[in-house]
Image 1 (cartoon, rainbow, N blue to C red):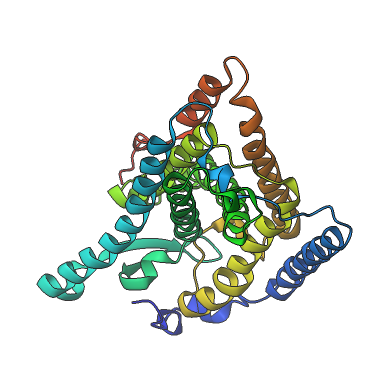
Image 2 (cartoon, rainbow, N blue to C red):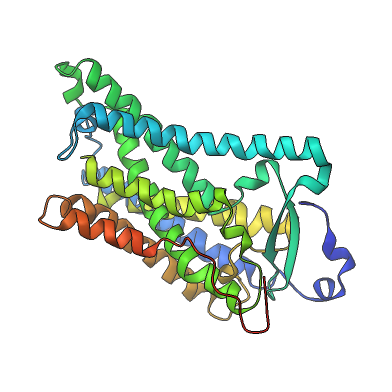
Length: 331
């Protein structure tokens, strides 16, 4: 169970210095966070970062009518939060019927990539960056749907043309959640599944209905919004995207979660890797590239062939099938 100190009975775990190198990695990440805060403070003071998005922006589209856009955003928000609720409800039903035996097993790795199985249940189902990004995307669609309804209810209202706090927050949420949707889908498809498969570890957790929805539907919903909507992504919001990831790592994954499980969800974040700081740097540069790509989609959608190209690229990076069994091994 999560929080159960299984490592006390494991001589390998007890004899190894598992925390060596973690402070260095955390200090590096906190340094990046401080730099991001400095950039936000400077650009705000210099007038570069301007919060000027209006509710009217959420009623605009180059491809669909406003009622269709409203329905799409409501449907996305309902699907996201409905899936979150169904996770908790399904856990409750299983555990009422079968107790601990009804809980789903999830497999994570120690720093030396030894697999440990946990009973996955309750709020622990939301421990991954995928779930954090999923909820963040749901918050965007919830706010965007509300703003769209306001515009649809009174399309001629003058206040829709004035900068609005909720509209600015929604624009920020769109940029951050879009970058993480791309990052999560690509990481799962091209890093986590192939890496586990090569080592003969279980990949079943990536192919449950919930996981498939979160690893693929998140990108599909983002692409649909970026192509059909007209909400701009401000490049100066990038520090917020980096900050969100650093909060996840420093405030949860590398600290609280590791202390309670002695495992990592993402093996490449191992602080004892000889190039751990380089890996973190590459990860943040990759996130910045995905943030820029999400902003670029807003420009591509208006160009001939731009929308089909984006749709084909999104479909190409989604993973639906399990990898074939390795010779002599099965999952």
